[in-house]
Amino acid sequence: MLVGRAYEALGERERAAKFLDLAAFGPSELAVLPGLTPRASLAVSPDMGGLEIRDYVRHAIASEDAVAAVGRARSFAQRFPGSGDAQAILGDAEFARGDKAAARAAYARSALVRRSWPLTLRLAAAQEDAAETRRLLESYVRDNPMNAEAAALLADAFAAAGDWERAAQLLDHAMALGMARVPWVLAARSIAAGKLKDNDGALDYALAAHELQPMNPLAIAALIDALPESEGATRSELETKLRSVSASPR
Image 1 (cartoon, helix red, strand yellow):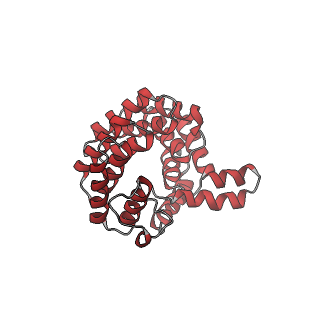
Image 2 (tube, rainbow, N blue to C red; image 1 turned 120 degrees about the vertical axis):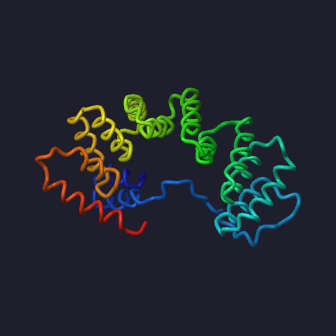
Image 3 (spheres, one colour; image 1 turned 135 degrees about the vertical axis):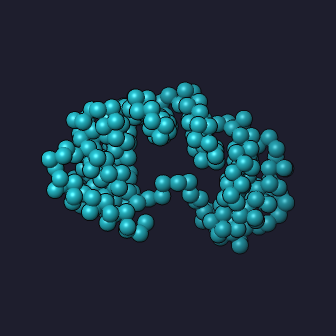
């Protein structure tokens, strides 16, 4: 997205479009970032340092060896029970293994040391209950009102609960903080406007999202939803486009 925006600022719209379209198909869930050093070459010793443990666990998760990841992370957390980083690494390993309860417990222990935004995201992802996820995001946004991404994700949580007034307010806040050119935020604001009977606003937001990222499924869907009934032909074209985009390999 950033590369696409840079090319756009330089006036190279064709090159920008390639990167913006790629961004539309990027992963929307948490994903591990493997280290550059192959796991096999990492020394396995009782006194491995934090960065080595982190890289080892990341490689183990990336290679779908969650058992090894949990074993190494648990040993590290036992050596340094007061380390927020050690607990976060253990939470990642437990999450990868599919044990959300253990992941939540480790993330919560890490949060007692320092609750960063990345940790809050992981803690929210490990929740089983949507209301609890929303509570976590509300708490973070209350303490960090200038975090635009947090505000936008909290808006998404309120939208899922049908609270469109609060969703719209939070999306407006997120856009004021710099997310006014993020397609999914504009698409979400379009849907919120439609739910609040602001049809003109819904169309304006949807058109803006679609112009920024024409291949973004959320932008396409928002525009379909916002188009007036008289635009049947355009809606039909967009529906065909959405089916094609949705069927494309990610």
